[in-house]
Length: 250
Image 1 (cartoon, one colour):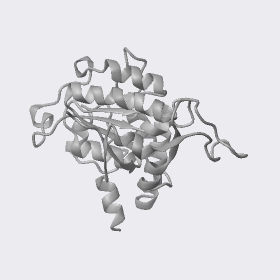
Image 2: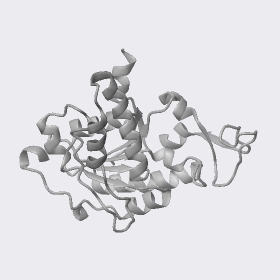
Image 3: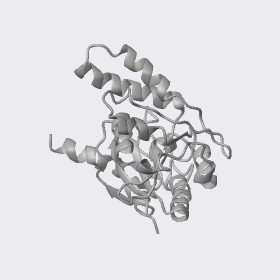
């Protein structure tokens, strides 16, 4: 059985670079947010890095917006887009530019959209063109299905609980088993460490607890709670990603 891997958090640029480096057709990237939200975060990330390497980022920002434009999926007939992020990564080699045209990208702005899409997902329905044979395989690796922002999509919703997370994770595990694809979960990088993210407490049941304190987003939970790591540990295994390992040695 194919077990999903929960990788350490990544910036949008780290995510995109990783996908291009590890791509095997027909890899699918599921961005757990709206297209506009992801595009904004990607532009801010790339623009921040670009300021350190080049004095002019206006044209690069405009190109990035154009290259990542897509539409939110509305299952069971989602919209997928080809993505050329040559300008986003500033110095992509020609191989990466060619590869990016064969990556399937889906936007799921709500938990409902995500579950519906996972339940009907089929690689045969993709309109992304098949690449040349030289781009279609790499060291006998499996295709990837990558979810970016799985936890963030559930957070601050009625599904932010062990019950809600498990319901979505079980659907993903069923899909991974059906396809035998490599399945990855990656969260956007914030101020929290990987360990802190896994130690975050959530209620056991949907609506089974509430926060106390003046700030409803920061207060402690009432009722029974469980750590995120214990929930996801039932459905996946944890692994530090290459960007996290390199950063720890800087």
